[in-house]
Length: 303
Image 1: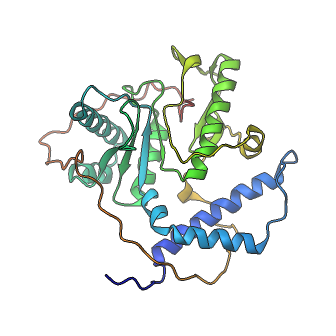
Image 2: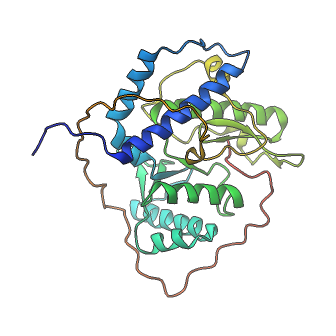
Image 3: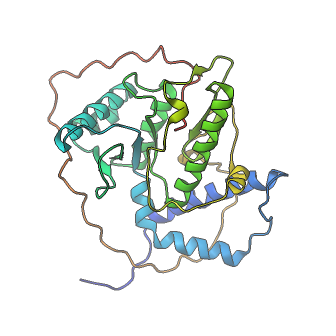
């Protein structure tokens, strides 16, 4: 096996550029907030170190850019029943989008699903959907966020992109803040989009689901690190409109020029095929339940 280092691919460089742009957009928002405790000084050396670290994780970033995550889905009595249930939920989500390319990818077996992490006790482990490309992943998320939650979704279920460990920490804190504000308001007025706190459009808000005040975090990730709530509040974005996907970043953000360091790429093993389904062409696609009754305040739910 050739262990010599290889230059980063153009695709990994493009993914990194999007990540850097996203970081700068968030930094601009933080520095514009007078209550922010973040120092306005960002050294070039620390920025360069962050870029080198991101490049070394280019494969991980690329893989995550093609995945969506379903949070809050209850598992069944056996792994086989759970896999069948997850397949039905995925099909309902794809049908609800009314997107031909997504439906074709699903029918051909190019969209797979898997519970994660595998070594955790079954309960409400997240479901990771792997799609053929980042653009299809973004279209899936955008479609669901536009039309609202499928009617079969439990109150605690929602879709988001596959987050990096640092983003998972921020997402958890934002979710706790949203739950706190919703309990104070007595309705679903706040939610979480990826890792940011958002405010739904009013004036009509949905009531709190049964048992909402006693909900526990459904997503457990050992990589989430502790972080103070005060730091999180400085990063919270309150918006009356949904936050766009990471692929729709501000194209006017300044570009950082730097020499691309040499990175060593590692081969990654193919995902376990234990519960990955290859689908045959269906004679007749099932009709998804109309979603027009979903209130306009729909969106990502706070856990």
